[in-house]
Image 1 (cartoon, rainbow, N blue to C red):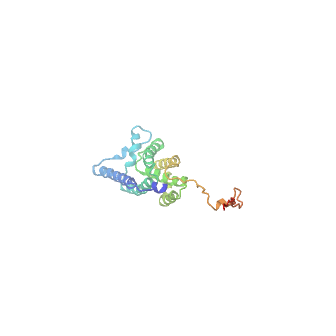
Image 2 (tube, rainbow, N blue to C red):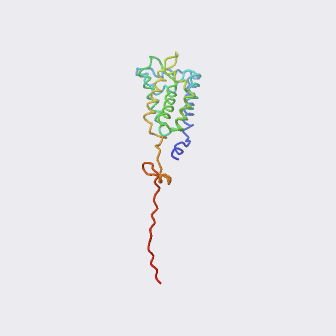
Image 3 (cartoon, rainbow, N blue to C red):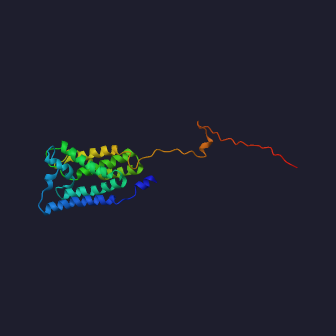
Length: 226
């Protein structure tokens, strides 16, 4: 019953993913139609000006392909986060996003790093590892679905392709794993089995020997008056 109450659908399950996706597409539309270049607002590692990208990079994209590739997993993973982990969802998204940007700023190559891919890897890692750590059957099932859908993403935390911020991916992946450990006791957790003694169990003693309870009959002398 406790799990059922925690798994009730709230407005945030769909509202947050939709708002986020609308915002990133809207910003790209503004950039293209008004001839802006928002790339300079991304993370540029180890510079004071580039530090603003820690907070802004997750909203900036280079082209429609970049946007589309992030939009679908964002919707799936954000919906999963706010449905199964609503107790910590905002903390994971907001604090995790900032930490992902900060790690990228700290160790990435000297280049502008943009895109919501860091958030995608943050969510992928958190949802996957949380299910494994909690060992709850529903969350484990979700983890298996996520790895089936997006398991191939793991290769892009390595520098295997030019033009991709593998540092942002790796940062999100590590932060998601850490948050899965930190919040392992929050929300839905696998409860320890509670043994309930039944009438059948009462037929055996502590060592497992058959020992049915003895029935004691109380005899009372009855006095008859004539």
